[in-house]
Image 1 (cartoon, rainbow over the protein chains, first blue to last red):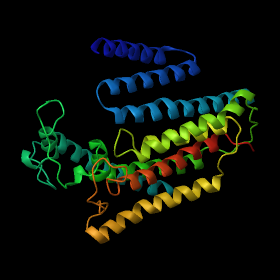
Image 2 (image 1 turned 60 degrees about the horizontal axis):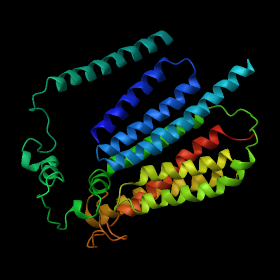
Image 3 (image 1 turned 45 degrees about the vertical axis):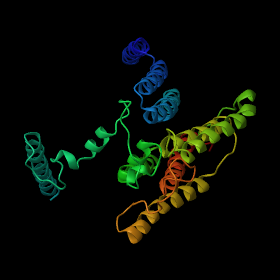
Image 4 (image 1 turned 180 degrees about the vertical axis):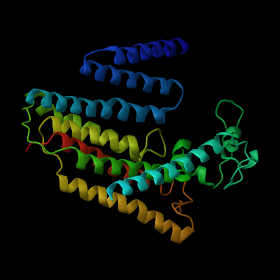
Length: 81
Length: 247
């Protein structure tokens, strides 16, 4: 169990660093969703299933969808110019 | 004239800021003898003490169920969130409402063409949506028995509506969303006022005396969770329609 937690923590760390350093906004959004999903697994390992469900639904579902919508709107504005 | 007015406003803002800064400084150096609304120094009177005494880590620890507020639901987190801290949850929902209000003002309505979705998504969307609606409904109906609750349930239901929007299926209209949100919001505060009239405390659970673990137990907790779920789902779905609307 501890090894799994350490593995997930390392994945979260790498994903967060990737999100900050990448130039492509779309990749950053997708990796950010993956980081949220990993943190939901982390909450489950820490025996907080309520928080895990909320994180999975809001953090990795709705936030990613909203970011992608905003990204699409930004691209539309860029193409108009 | 205009300069004098702006100068006055600046001085007023500076005064308010210094007032707040003074109190932030006072709180930061506070040693525990400041203003006390409730008695939270005596450890026996704190909520944390009660939770420490009935932890789940020790195998031998046991808790005798009586008829107190925290016994009303089988899931202890739910009874904290909806019985003790219902003001928090309600104000969270109000914060979400204000966010969406500002969202509607700020985002300009521009004409855009929506691309036609692929046939596979268009055909499979209803099946996915039914499954998502089932999971969302289970979340708020069973919120007082198992992990879950109103907020994630509303989020999952709104994700189902998002799938329908992306697949080009007509699911709900703007007017339905507004009516659902208004009814849910009014009902939450209506029940709060009703419990004030019956029990004397705002948002107190006045349906007690049912068996722990039943589907219809926990008094008002499932009712509140259902209302919160519908309000959150309507509010979040509004955003998707705002973004992804065919003009």
